[in-house]
Image (tube, rainbow, N blue to C red; front, side, top):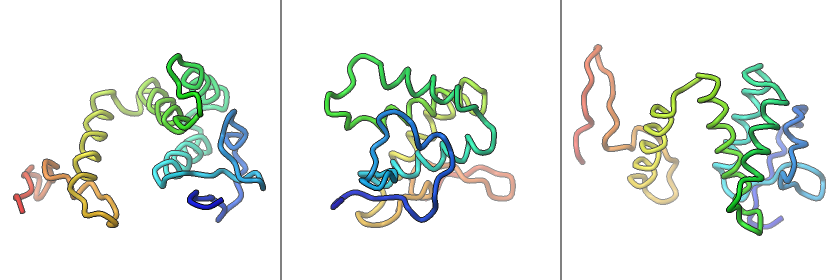
Length: 143
């Protein structure tokens, strides 16, 4: 499929691959329009494999997002629903807090805005990111 990433380096054994509406190639492999979608998928699969949440917990969280009013008719927001479900699960299970998740999301956004086109986004690119050196917090100097 031109313009779409197909994650096929390994075979998935997780039942998450059977999730409703998961975009798939003709061969049944998950497909992703953007790299962040593959990352969100892989993170979810890994957390499930590690026993952080059960298949039923995931199915319930994803279903709640997929059937939420206001979804795009073309389904192009599928992975937005996926991320929302994962966010809700990790906060609901107290793996992280909503404020921590929001702060990290804002940091990634600032990092993305500060990263030159074509370069990988790294949190170190966030101009407001605090770093710890010798136990002291400092703000990165402006460039």
